[in-house]
Image: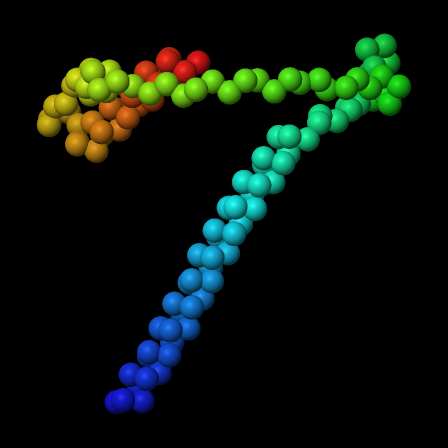
Length: 120
């Protein structure tokens, strides 16, 4: 019996070790992706080929630089307590018509709509 318990413990330890390695790998990948995305955003834009308006073929002779100016980052504007309460009260909850989860989703949609209005 003790041998079986030792084998089970060893199997659990191996699984836990693998899970921790997977979590570490996920964290490392997320960080690497974030760094790569930041680097890509800082790189100058490249030249692109364009279609010739006369013959319809892609031609190197007709390339133009893609000039994009980074847009200034706007500061995110959240909702005030009053606006959040108003969003909650806008969605009517009826025990007969919807579940609590459906009501929560409707409130979330209303809140997202209000945030989008304030930030676009």
